[in-house]
Amino acid sequence: MKQGNTNIIEVWEQEGQIIEGLPVERKSDIKAFVTIMHGCNNFCTYCIVPYTRGRERSRKPEAIIEEIKDLASKGYKEITLLGQNVNSYGKDLDDMSFAKLLRMVNDIEGIERIRFTTSHPKDLTEDVILAIKECNKLCEHIHLPVQSGSTRILSKMNRKYTKEQYLELVDLIRKHIPDVAITTDIIVGFPGETEEDFLETLDLVKRYNMIQHLLLFIQLEKEHLQQNTKIKYQRI
Image (cartoon, rainbow, N blue to C red; front, side, top):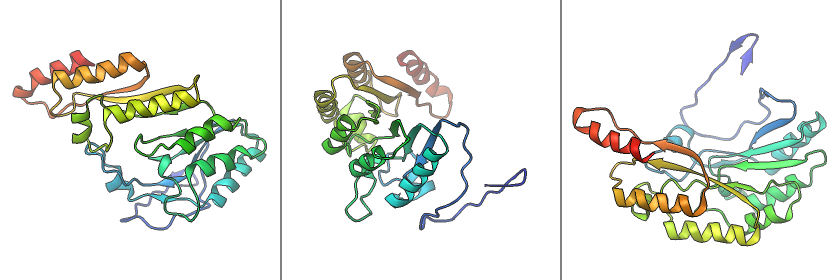
């Protein structure tokens, strides 16, 4: 928040009810980001989000729709729905899901394009895929972070899916939406990653060609780790 030219920051010690109506600073007159939920319940081993932002809490759909309608009245044309795991939206609400929210947003007059991020592969369901297919304003793009093509490394990351399950999900998406654009994130050099694990990831990349972000996992530099770091750079 801002008071005059001064940024006002307050850090809460624990998660609680979502406060609506706080001012939002927008950097575009055409595109807007709209948060639909806060927090995360997944506890991936490399991620701090559940500890800093708390558990998942969904905003009421009425508040989200009201915010987007207000944006549409001001001339905004493109909306991106935000959440650490948007596919979990509505699990803490009565009779609500992310697929239902997508269809509600699609009905708002004035909005022409709808995007969302980020999806967790273990929670992306067929009803969300069908909503993307059937809603005319939803962009045919899904960002679906795989993080690794090795089932062994995925288990160490606590991702709760296997390489095979991820590939089946990609095939299901492309079955319903043949021209879909799928992007992903990959971590290279995760602790314990072997050459065989890396080749499993490389196989996935070559098969689907959908990298958006590539992250090199570097441990603290010590003399005995320098060779491992050199290998990680070669892989990336």
